[in-house]
Length: 158
Image (cartoon, rainbow, N blue to C red; front, side):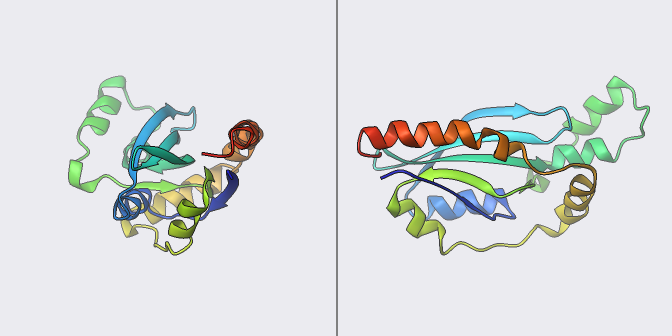
């Protein structure tokens, strides 16, 4: 049976690495940069070729930090340079609200044991984002996810 629920995650890359330790393949299905420079991503998780979860994530990352650090009147060239100069080893992703997922029992048992912390370098930007924006993007798409749960359950879940 498919279940819709949520989990608090502070470090998206660590969460994905955790899932992979259980032989779960994580695929990016959809990715959107939002007007406030946060991002939305839909992930599909498979184990042994079978879909076991859909995950919706609303997050900020080191690209958000690069944009926040620019002057308000930055030129296009400065913006592009700031985004391109982010070093690969310093990229982080931090959810700005609880992650929503549709999953089977096996996936839920795995993630119920997961814990993490906000990466130190990301905490200031998470505070900036949360002070300027109200979390609720994922709440707004939860209805569509509920429709997907009903559809999956009509075929006996996953």
